[in-house]
Image (cartoon, rainbow, N blue to C red; front, side, top):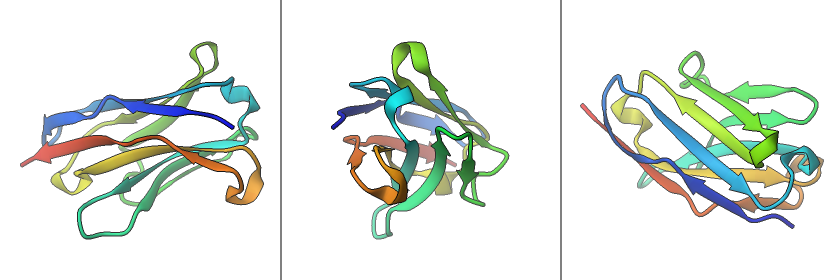
Length: 118
């Protein structure tokens, strides 16, 4: 299993940037895939970005070109760099870790709130 701790959320103006961090309790090299989801009030949780050990990276169309997912193996931490933020990016962001393909043995962080003001 793995424990995940999300951090880095906050209040930012439209057009600003934030970097979210997800600290894992084990080497991220041992994790099949990691990702970020978000959920705004009254909406379903949606995938924001996803990255596998094989190097495959996917982004939601709404964040392509603005968000970047990356990993720091030395610190067992995954990041989500968010630039050109928009009010519609406001949500609680959750990191995930899949120990096996297909979303099996998926673990979630506790979430971090991102609020973008117009």
